[in-house]
Length: 205
Ligand code: MN3
Image 1 (cartoon, rainbow, N blue to C red):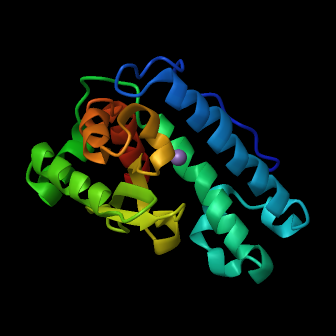
Image 2: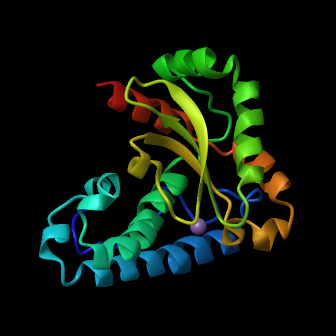
């Protein structure tokens, strides 16, 4: 994904996540909200040739190496692009379960998939205001659950994001209004575990 960034299509149709997430929500979320992050990221990078040469991952991993005048805009809008692509990529496969190495690592870290769900929901409900809950791997490929505010990305904390759930109200308000917990319960059933398992294998190398 080099500069200038473009809005990547969803990996499924806008109505693929119905009824849990409506096509109306996805149209706004992908076509409007994410598009705005893409536009603002390009604007922030327009007069920073050094930043343009780096990948989005590199930018977010090393925010301290970005010129100070650009740092906040790239943190917010670069995170906005990266986090949304991961969020959308991690959905769309009902009935899948963690496979292979990821399944074993989850058993080590959480005991069971059910226990992971409890912790993930706790993190997502506990994120005050806007943000995300994440399944992440550390440098030793050990797993944990973290939450971040706004568009902050775990890459900036030296963690590798495997899976995230967006708990900004724009992700669920049209379908669930204030019921964030109901949205989360539905989201668990939409996870594309094959994608997440594969992402973990890539991280392990
Ligand atoms: Mn969002």
